[in-house]
Length: 341
Image (cartoon, rainbow, N blue to C red; front, side, top):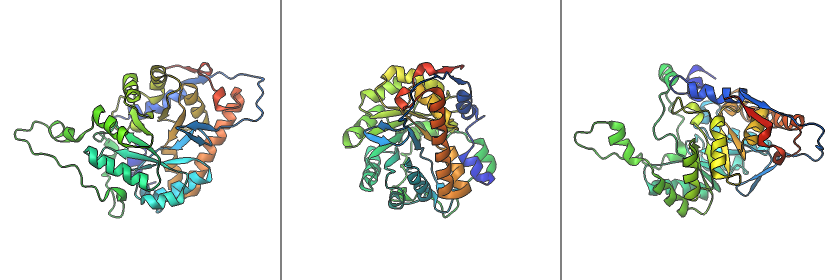
């Protein structure tokens, strides 16, 4: 992975304190194992949003994967399929929806961005549904890009042959000129951003579950629950938007406490080992999403690299479960993990 791609895929925003905190939070967690339990018939299988998952693990959505490998998202989908893991496809995929679906038929989750208006966002959702995706995620924590110093220093830009091919038919939001505008962001960009009312409208128009990704505050999780979101993903965008936001692991317990144990709460950010997955599950996550390790696997060896990373994570999770006395995911309890945050 060259310096331009490292700056885009691996760096965080600002001073990268949030990006670093995501990993550090897991390093500050202690697992308290239980001994002499009957571990026969163990399994990592879980059910999330009415789907059975072979493990509580999905590939997080990330854009422009052809920067890392010439087959991009289609290679990632093949690697996921080989390990019976689902990939969440980014709206900014550099490969067509149909090609990705053909390469990974079981990867039927799709990440939406707000497209500047209700109608355009709904049109993107309908395009994903027509391609066979049946679980949607709306990312809400990046209305503007974070201040990514490493990208600026590397002068990162997309090459001419890489683009968000599935968004080509959608025109970018049009800004209404205003006299005496004081701020480009507040006077122009902000008028295209969604509110809770917009998201509630979108949920009512869909016949499939929609999760909200980018939740860090318990009251936002509660509001998502109230408007009918199928679940939330605790995420700070991998530390790529607001630097100084809390680590996702530290935000997770309060959110689960606020919405209750039965409401689907997933999380991403900082997961590097299988034991990290166990820690997140103990603190209330139903499943986790992993991004940067997958990007590295894709860059090194395409679909085989993706498959290898997923296999390592799943094997390490199983070993951590066995060593902590958990035959199933349901055996993983909060009192098994102590946070030193």
